[in-house]
Length: 338
Image (cartoon, rainbow, N blue to C red; front, side, top):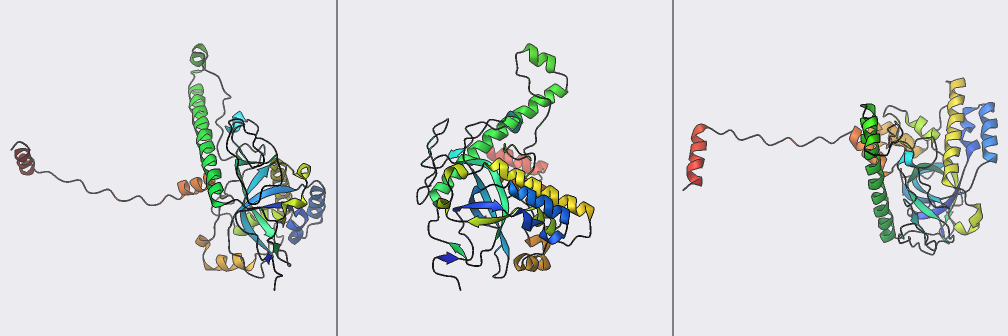
């Protein structure tokens, strides 16, 4: 029985502080080298602010951890990145921060956000596994984002993704022309010459990380996907963190990629290493139907679009064309000219 003011899971639509439990992520492998590497990585770990967008699988009371889709928060404005089709205005300030290159209206949290330098960036979305707190999670001093402000954020994200896609499409068209041998013509016409590489939108959207947040192949085992998903400690009270202690999201992505490499290297050394023990909520769904389990490792709009593209809904059958006989055509002409 939890004490008053506490709950089993953090609430969706709230902000929290997280840190990666790197040592716990390799514990089940029984690999001393992986343990040592994870401990070294943990010494360099950071503290991050995330927005808990939604819980992915309803947890059971005995689950040691549960999965959330999270949006990372940055303590600085975005950097332009031509390769990733990102401009510095693709961000949303969180009030009391009001600084934005194009004067975007900031998001207003309830209560007021305790930091003055934070932004949301579109594309900084990832799945995380939250360690259960036996004492429950506090509900006091929790900062949330009202529904209307969530919609405002998503509208800004949509505008930014549209702009990024337009930049991506323009770059790909230019690259195609260059590959066809039109570079000299473009130079003569004064057109800007860009690198001869078409950058896929499947990379992390301007995060500065070399890793990818996008779904693996559909036949990737569920245990493997979850094993590489960051396992994190979470504290709902932002006031426990000082503003200068907030680490940048790029560092979290580097931690994620670093621990993933440690795990993959351990499995290469010992392919028979024990699998990740699954919580009851995942084990029961796995036993019932693989199709019921969300297999994408990122729930952002770009990933969902990719999933829909790879698994299109059946198109409605076209209506059969009407067959016109010579008699019916003649009769129709008579009606028109009566």
